[in-house]
Length: 292
Ligand code: ADP
Ligand code: MG
Image (tube, helix red, strand yellow):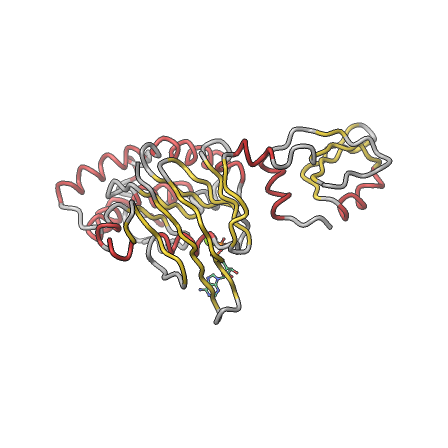
């Protein structure tokens, strides 16, 4: 089983003023990992270091027991990366783009031809192969970028916000597709959208201000907030006070009352706060939003 160790990696920007990654430590084996954190958490920095596009200031990345700096080309040949900043070649047809990327990755002509044909099928874009990327929808562009990341049959697949800017239908498609291709690979997906990874990730890695908060299965993570998620029936005029004082994960109207869902260590007194089963969404709020 492949193993990627991220060992005590740190990285700062602006002469140390911004700690983008702070002593980050995690080991990945095959399966889908969800890297979850808000904007600025350090997700892209981590991915850039894992893919050797950025140097860490401290720490190292070890693939199957060997430092990736020592592996060099050998490491790049097992790596597939879909960066967040997409220098998409708008004037290229999809076909030309994939041939171009295949050449950059050093694929032989015959190999490239077979691979491109089968990948176009996989990402369901065969009929658009001769259209320009500039004319593609958001979902088609994302699928084209995933396809290029798969050209070299990577053992490690790093996808930086693959569902950014997609509508719900496209998100579901991409999600199912990632889940399908993940077999026997290390797949790391970054997102700030809980539903992108809730059901497909074997483990979720919570990243906050460059630091690892925790990493575990979704089920185990949710256990951490058992007994602190409540539904409370309140009067309409109390809503503002609840919004100001609690992490509100949901609210809905019921006749003349409002039911709010809150995540709190200190449930309000004088209200019948009903404990409810926590979700990953509640956990996200608990970890990334401070109680006011
Ligand atoms: P994420 O991908 O989770 O949004 P990033 O890794 O892009 O987070 O950024 C982490 C932190 O580092 C943020 O505070 C961001 O502003 C800062 N940062 C990222 N890249 C640079 C850079 N090239 N120069 C200065 N600061 C940066
Ligand atoms: Mg990012």
